[in-house]
Image (cartoon, rainbow, N blue to C red; front, side, top):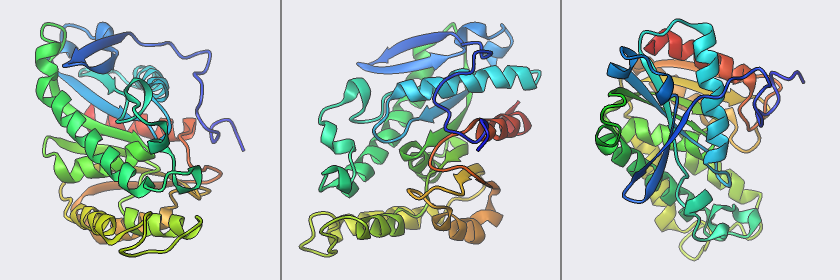
Length: 286
């Protein structure tokens, strides 16, 4: 496995870090990267890229993404528009953690893993909608958001799918090891966990939560006219590509979809994936 395929867990020594600004929206911390480097012209036309981290992680992971993305973006292209990356701690992560068990899966002892994961996804969507609504008044005089793009890894990738279906103001998304079919994915995951019964008397997968997941996945089938970059790992056993392929085959023609499966890559973000992300963003949004 080359360095390009390995999990991206630290910045290369050659990467220049971007500026970091923390804003507080009613007690909710949002971290903005790259705002100080915007030219006067770029500040008038700024693309804000949301990046949501994975389950069990924190905004610190998203911070690595922000620095590397912005560094490569400037290295690979001449930008007329400004780019700022926005990150935050997902519900029940990092400084917002309330119960550490809630981010664990069934094997980690969380009997309500399915409940908590869907609730965290919904919470992420609400948080992003709040930031979209209020960001311009909190950054007034620094930059003007003119477009929002969504990016997410794992739990953040699941969130990116939901954003595409629920938020009209976001027409493009970068989905890293996230799934449009959480129903079948979780049923398969449940089969590998202890006490895997399904039904009304099941703590882990009652009909009430099953119906919520089915409704979520069904809504994703109505995504139309969106620009979507999908990045999966061929070795990913946690969120396999087999749960994404049917959505692409059925709905890809109604959207501008680039579906990429990386060999020798598992459930992680790699520098090879980052290269693809930057090239796609430059093509679609610069």
